[in-house]
Amino acid sequence: MSNKINNLFANSKDKKFLSLYFCAGCPTLEGTADVILTMQRRGIAMIEVGIPFSDPLADGPVIQSAATQALKNGMNLKTLFAQLREIKDKVEIPLVLMGYLNPILHYGIEEFCKSCVESGVSGAIIPDLPFKDYQEIVKPIADKYDLRIIMLITPETSEERIRFIDDNTDGFVYMVSSAAITGAQKSFDDAKQEYFRRINAMNLRNPRMIGFGISNKQTLEAAQSNAAGAIIGSKFVTLLNESKNADEALDKLFAALKS
Image 1 (cartoon, one colour):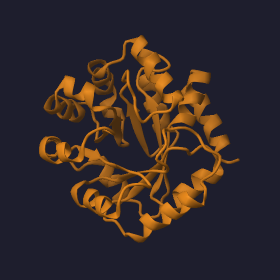
Image 2: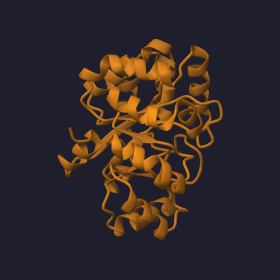
Image 3: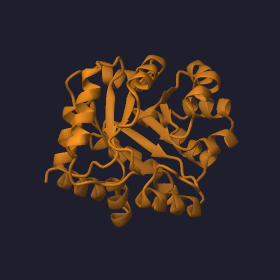
């Protein structure tokens, strides 16, 4: 069976995708499956499921707070995989786990990749995974399980490094809109637009998704016109925490993205 991430981008050249992030186990421990199935029903193209961790370096206050709540609720990798296995047959869109290296190493890299496949996960984003370790240790195992490890690039990433990532990964490249932590922004300034254009001109082999700071029509359109789509995290996490209901949170998100 081919990887769902590759299928998503291969089958729809002109579509502009919307991918959403939420933290597993927040607002409630048992709600993860419902959030995923609701997002799928509402037309979200791909879902990033956050693995809560006590020291999330790249995350802003909204996602840090969600992770803290999820850990208090008792969420961990073992529980998450069990919940995902239960809905595996209902999920048709790609699921990507996003989490830090520490809990994954603790779980075991081989065991993690195997559990991903058994629970219908197509890829993983590990922001603090050094590229050398990815190539030497993680990639051979992930390849064996047909799991895509997604790498992040920022405005500070050199062209040489971006080409290296593009040549040595598969699925998509995660373009972080700024070198700052996650969080909603009103608009993308000239420097960010220039960064988007610069990466566009590189004609990378992999499709790109732009994340960090997308929360309204302006930032969404800027991201979608410069990449295969946009990833929204903090804005959706905030709405989900406020309403405690995925449908309601999505209603509010879609309304915000039109204004």
